Length: 310
Image (cartoon, rainbow, N blue to C red; front, top):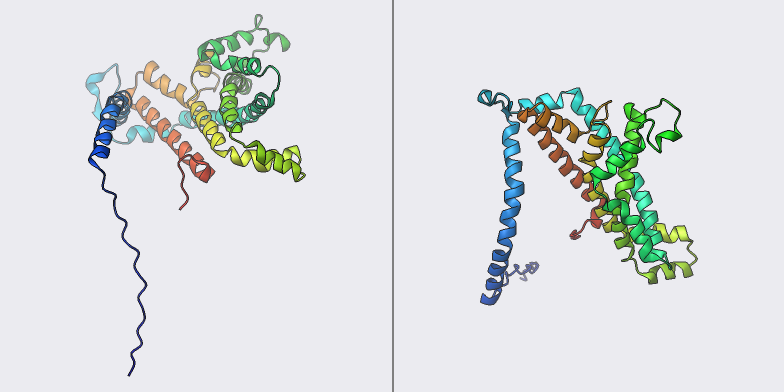
């Protein structure tokens, strides 16, 4: 009698961990020792303040009455999230971020294309475009405030007599967005210019030979290859715009319903001296920034640097 047997599939060999030589281990130890001072400094200037802010956010702590400080758990977070001031500042911040970053992406891409394709005066053009970004934000904000000052501003003179756009919510937010776009579009253009330099000319030439128009080459060839650069540019600018403080503080100081989340945190920490509520606002801003970063990386998928598809 014959016995039928089924062959078992050969098991994949277990991955073997490569044994490091003594020299490789010594190099790793040296690398850790060389990185240790920088890591310690980063932990000292970032980790400790962040941990202390989290600790304060669980306290009822008024700097005018430090002896009355007490642990209140998540009460500060509940008070902030249930406050209409938080949600108004949240939506003002979201509007400024979304509109300014969208405009900066469009203008930055246009400037990057011009700088990339310019044949004459390329260095001068790049220098001229980057001038606004080289100006300190506070100085730039004061120049915009002067431009819109009634009776003296050179832009204010274009409006009817008696109008004061910085004293009304919608015009003031529009001016804040305009100041942000003027100041930071060069930064966006600089990052996108780096992405354009990575697009091979051979692919564009092949698409041109196949009959693709300029728009088709840009949409189907250039943009897909620029996804990592676009991700970095959008991520940096969105996180920076979400923490906007300088322009609003100089132009309106948060008056007329133009305050952002950072202005709200500043008012509670340094004006009201309420360290508990102010720290809770700071922690919530940090959490929203982290969520935005994760959403961007997930949304761009394989464009995220370091992503490996299994």
